[in-house]
Length: 195
Image (tube, rainbow, N blue to C red; front, side, top):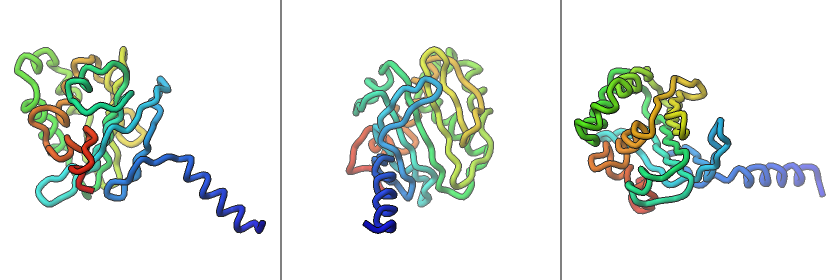
């Protein structure tokens, strides 16, 4: 067997072991991930594109301990969770991000819920700066610690509370999500992913 053929087979085996579940708008998404620092394994529940008018803003992906298609089951599911946002648009400025977060919380939580979350909502929106194409925001919920907010590989901070993470998940999976097609895609509906 020639060395070229051996090299080719080695590369093929390497990529076969990476186990990408799918590719959305050119973004490869792994089928399973390990959440640091717990080492918990999460599975890709679903992914799709967040569209605004005619623009593709980001690829959103939801990772859970096990697949689920009902929002309430996901909200109540014990264990860690991840929402990943892979930005496609050239730039989303800080003010627009904060406006989007605030509108999402207003549209998907009650006044009582927002009162209970209090300054945590403001602390969360203050963690974000302008993002650019290729940036990745990861929102990793770790029980007992809270929601770790990552921009690329830099930890921006942690917001405590399972109640905060539930409210955060509602921005994508609540009754008034920013993008209904993305909601359906994150819930694993293959016909609405819009790839």
